[in-house]
Image 1: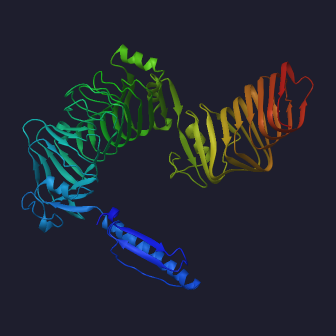
Image 2: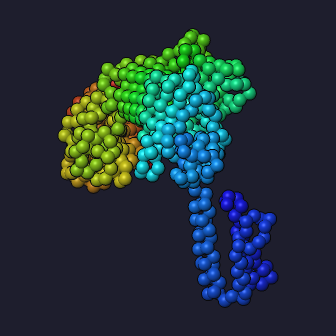
Image 3: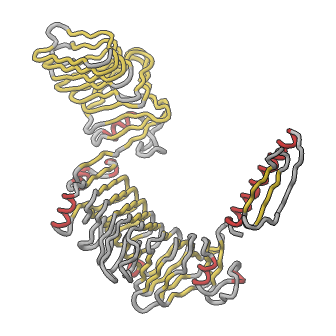
Amino acid sequence: MPEAERICYTETDQKNGAWLHIFCAVHPKDRSLFSERMVSHMDKRTKRRFAVCFAAFLLLFAAWTVSAAAAETVYLDAAHGSDANSGRSAGAALATLDAAIGAAKDGGKIILLSDYTIRTHYTEPQHTGEIVITAKDGTRDTGAKLIFNVTGETHYRLSGATTFRDLDITLKNFVMFTAQFHNLTFDTGLTVEGGEKYAFVIGGYQTPANTGLAADLDAHITVRSGSFYKLCGFTRTKGAGTMTYTGTAHIAFEGGSVRELYGGSLYNHYAGSAVVKVTGGSITTLWAGGDGPRRLNGDAAITIAGGTVGSVMVNNVVGNAAVTLMGGKIGALAVSYASDAVKKLHATAGAKNTLALNMLRYTAAQREAFAKNFDSVENLTVAYVAPSAFGSGTRADDPTSLSRAFELLRQTGGSIVVTGNCYADLTADVGTLGGAVTVTGEGGGTLNFGTNAALRFAGDLTFENITLRQSGNLDMTVTDGTLTMGDGVTTTGGSVNLSAAGTRAALVVRTGSYGTVTVGAGSGDYSLYLSGGSVGTLHCTGATAAKSVTVVVTGGSVTRLAAADHCVTDALAMTLSGGR
């Protein structure tokens, strides 16, 4: 029976607390007892035992409720079934899809036992639960097909969440799989014969019959297998009139293939926002907006993490457009507007087009070409380091050594994630870093430098949320760049010493303990910004006098502050506004 009709409640005699009744009834208005137990004048031990039994009873009752609400399995056999049957077994199969969906309207699986042919436009009966249409009965494949055999265009309209799985679908002409803003999933195990030529997947409406239809709904489309011609997040064809949608189309493409994928609408209508994530499969062209001048009035977020995409066109997006490239193969990436009017709307909104990418996944030429039309580019490149690891370093489950991670990021920059206690197998001369590198720890990330180590590098290097362990001295020198000891740095063992050298270099200290910090170990321009941590000796002294030295202390502590005679030729500026 429906869960809402199963009621359990207790009643206790408020006068002496000794009477306890347990009721299970069909409905709150029906006090007919399913079971009743009366406990009178119980001692404490008996009451505790009774409480345990009562709790166990409630657990069993809950399990029974969930089991009774389990999804239905309905059998459909167009060749031998009858709608007079129950549909609950292969021998009592139903004959029509209408009857099968009606039998599983609260959610369930419809198993095709023989080919089922749709010969006209079809709209599902209303259903509140997800319907799965399949030709697989457990581990057995029935071999049945879903066939669309219509002269001209066919519309298959959803009336609830629908999934196609483990099924052969045959198209003789154009078929519009129209979600009408219900969840539509093309799951694994699908073969769509003729799909690359005839199959449209539509998140919204096909030819809306009136302009009073809901325009603020979200669309949800997932594709894991099958071949399709075009997919759009919103609505296709004008119908009763042009509509302006304000919801968001969520499109997950994980497998299969489609020639053209649109976040917006086709052949008319204004769309809201689009979120597209590609992790597999093949897409010839991915459009953020709609076809032609059809625009997104909202934002677009496109993530490519796998699969193959011939071209990504960020077109006609009035709001912010964010593209994230984490993997997969991409032929081209561009930003475009169908008219100056759409481009002006984007500018007037103050919107931005941003690109974030894992630079290890793409060539230097691709990175340069991708970045041309974007307002900003974010580096998402990550290398992974773990103890005694010698993998590729490009994935968390395939880590590498610290030296290999630096080589991976030498040209592009990015983040190095250190897990566990790792040996810092770097040479004394790290060399020049072409992009900024951040070394961060996870799961107790520690770098062990051994005894009396020295590192010298050029470029921008940051340590954060990590432990630096050493015996003796660890001397770290930055030449022509910035060395940042960021948040969460712990130094243990011996003494960590920092120095700025070369033509122009800076030191930034937020956390950690340091023996000596030298601002000006050369003849250039140097600076130190200390906002936390502790420093034993802070000074400017080197083999030659520095041109200029700037020291700004806003926090942390310094035990000894010193400047040698003639250590600066032009200017020494010091600002002390905090700390000790």
